[in-house]
Length: 64
Picture 1 (cartoon, one colour):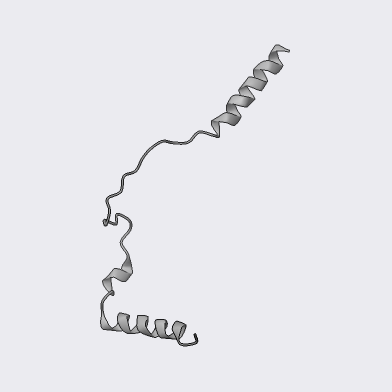
Picture 2 (tube, one colour):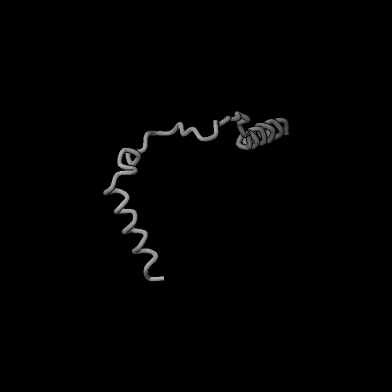
C-alpha cells in the first residue's frame, strides 16, 4: 500500500512537471528588427526589383 502511494505521488509530480511554463518576458523595441539579415534588403528599391514587383502585382490583379 505504501509503495503504491509513493508511486502515485511520484507519477503525479512527473505529470504535473509537464505543465510548467516559463515566465521570462522579452521586451521588444518598436521599429527595430533584431533578426537575421534579409538578403532582399540589398536589392530593395532598385529599378529591376521594382519592375518585377509591379509585374507580379499586375499578374495577380489583371484577372479580377
